[in-house]
Length: 326
Image (cartoon, rainbow, N blue to C red; front, side, top):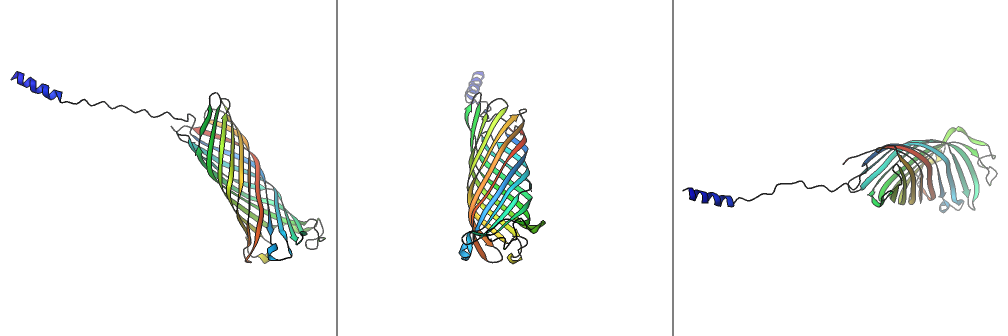
């Protein structure tokens, strides 16, 4: 009996299968060992201008080409931005900023022409800025080109930008024209007091961005950054409100629209105060242009919008905080 029992037990033992013990599968190392999120504030001081022509020559032989030229110039701006960026473990990123502020100063030169480009009116108005609103969001991928004592990273991206400015013009002073001031008055005279609002211009650009960012960390705490984007498609919506022109109807009485192009450039020098806190300063330039249509809203009349250009150049400073997420 003892022998039989031992044989049975031995056979049962031979049928027990060994199960391997579970073990943890290690995760791949984080490709980006720098802080992954960045939040901050930026101050941007800039100066801008807008210029465009209206061509009404197809509406009558009396009109010149261009019929009217409006130049908004020397418009300074003070703006605050909220800036942010985020990168994951594969170096895919999203970044952007949203800002706003106020416009100050500047001038409007409004010129009108008969056929043969006979200037029959030329007036100067003072500008008192109303507001500036803008924002950008980009998504892209980091590619490390050099990673030793100096680290160089190229980051192609695609993005979207919105840019809106509103200015108000006051008064009208007569400049020299070709008809001896017949319509406006003697050169230097004030046709409309500078306490009277004569025009409001609100321009809005919505743009597609294609570009790249290049960052070079030269030393332990100093980084140079450049950002360049071409704008292959920029849609303009521009509202002109002529407050003293009752013949044009209620405001806005002229609306311009068109699809054009442009570019945006930015450069920055950044100093890391700590691993997480950084201070930066740089320069930024925006440019956009288009042709299109100019609709006199209440008159059912459309003129050609030509050579509409907007630009803004300025310097900025920002402070940011970066923190880890992995």
